[in-house]
Image 1 (tube, rainbow, N blue to C red):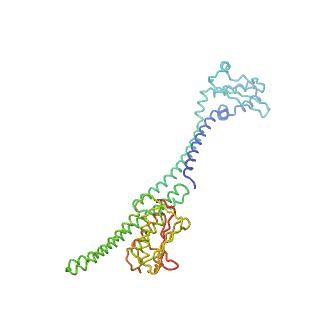
Image 2: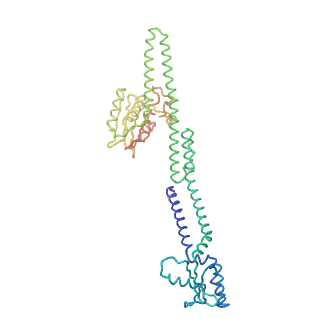
Image 3: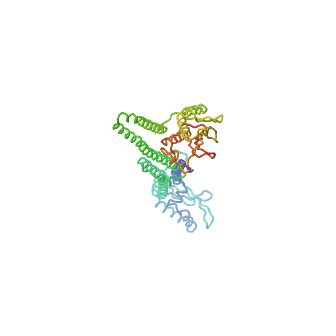
Length: 443
């Protein structure tokens, strides 16, 4: 993954290194003898031209050439041979030579800059040592006038740094703007799941963030959609018992005392159904609330208590429990109790009295499998994918219920980091399984 951290770090590091390097290079270059000898107009080509005049026209012509250079560029020049003897008088004034002699060991700054250069004549093969003394005011004035090239180089460096900074800024702000727009759309419930698809393809932190945001947005949209559907289903399911209650009350108002006594059981049944429906709706809603800290669960005790409660409502049914030893689970006992109650209740509705209901707890890889199997008719394969949706009931089902039991069991499994698996058993009947992590933590 191309880390955004390293990209920013490298960009700033290169910028600092480039500016520091250019500053050091320019400062060093502008004070180098070679820079001055090659760039100063009063020194460019002087050694070659003086050598030609000296060897062709003699000492006086060479002396005259040096004096012309001094008048034009204010540079004192002296030329020595290999033995250190002066070939021409030079242009050093006596007082300057005497002053330099007195200040030779003085640490204070001399009023001129001394430069030396060797030149070998291609014609005679003689080597000459040229000594230049440039006054500091003259040298400073030339420096100010010769800064065009260094300033141009610095300007180019600044332009390059500005482009790098612009690209780096855009690489950060553009993804942030897209994420901000996605957050705004999500807040307005108009978020499109693939709006950050291109950003999610990046191989840096923004790509990871966009991928996580896409998953979060899809999850939130699914939850919002399911909540809306739940509200629609709740309003529809509540309307039916309320309508029946209204009809029964209207009949009771018009009926005589004898007929009214016959209507009371019907009103009582409708009230019980309405209360049971509201209780299941509230149970489903509570599963989305914060459950608190997870705790160890005693599986044998939990399964045995569920078996006893289930057999109280159906004494004629037999429930067999099989528990693999050594199983441990971390979670919320009340959620699992409600989930197992609903699975056992469904099994009791469809299981024939002469066949036992099997309640099994076993390890499957790193998961805990809690399964409830009955020997009933099962469910048509076409309806299996929709089982577990709130208020969904198979069309062929004629037993009492509101279609919330499996939804409660599925939500309880998801709160534990697991899932609910529903299928027809190969040996006949129906099997519902809670797949849970063996050491589930709070989600």
